[in-house]
Amino acid sequence: MLRTLMATLGGEGFGSKEFPLYLLLKCFIVQKILGVNRRVPWPVHWSSRIVDVNNIDRGSRCPGLSMGCHIDGRNGIRFGRNVWIGPRVSIISMNHDPYDYHQYVTCGPIVIRDNCWIGANAVILPEVELGNHTIVAAGAVVTKSFKEGNQVLAGVPARVVKKLDEYRGQC
Image 1 (cartoon, rainbow, N blue to C red):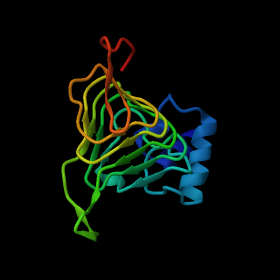
Image 2 (cartoon, rainbow, N blue to C red):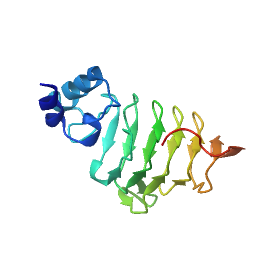
Image 3 (cartoon, one colour):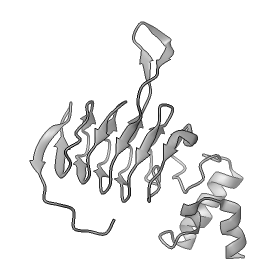
């Protein structure tokens, strides 16, 4: 029965060992039966919203699994391996044209490299690239790229507040 459930759920994330059975069942009921985030092929919290899942490369974890996230992939988002996303994070890859609010601006994707941690209530805006092992502090608003990596970003707008050594955990 479990194998049938996982096959029905689809996607790599649903069949992996990193998700306990109760989470798989909750996500199955909310996503596949109730239809919340139905098109997302990985587990997503029912209060999170994923826009244009086809333009999101999720990496090795599940973006949107924390509550209240808004992940807009219309211009593309590429997550690296081991990217942790806190609650109520907004990752917005598309913006309105400042001269016609009914139009959108096409631009490059957001890139979040390996071993990053995005803290609660953080906002990442279009075309941002974060280097490996970048921590975005809670409430930070990232408006430009920080490609160097091994750093902590904080503030509005975000800036580097601390340098870090290389990441030591598993990827």
